[in-house]
Image (cartoon, rainbow, N blue to C red; front, side, top):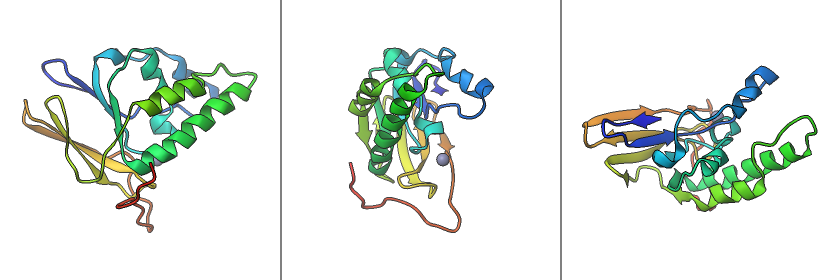
Length: 171
Ligand SMILES: [Zn+2]
């Protein structure tokens, strides 16, 4: 979460905690921010530990857009839909959300291309190829009010493969 002096907020990723029960229990804690105050959400890539709790934004009143590359959107749809179905089939697990909630997330998706600047409020955001999985990105954020730049790497690389999605239109 990035919060500027005027209270504007941007969120990068909202992943699912995965692992033993003491870790997965963290998924049920209330969010530490008010989703209705968030101006935009930016997703680095589609792995569940980065996108798995995005549907919780819907419950919290988030009404903005969730920005990602086209390949990330295509993969995220598969991964969130699968996560929701698997959760419904487990008997010892209370689902965090259902497939209908996933659809609400998909309806908020805004596709961005690598290396093309997006304006959200006073922020200027650019996705850069991270080479981690198809569609993955580092996210460069410039706050024009404070004249500060932050680069959020996300997960990087997949040595020695070079995986990006330049020119692929899958969404
Ligand atoms: Zn990853």
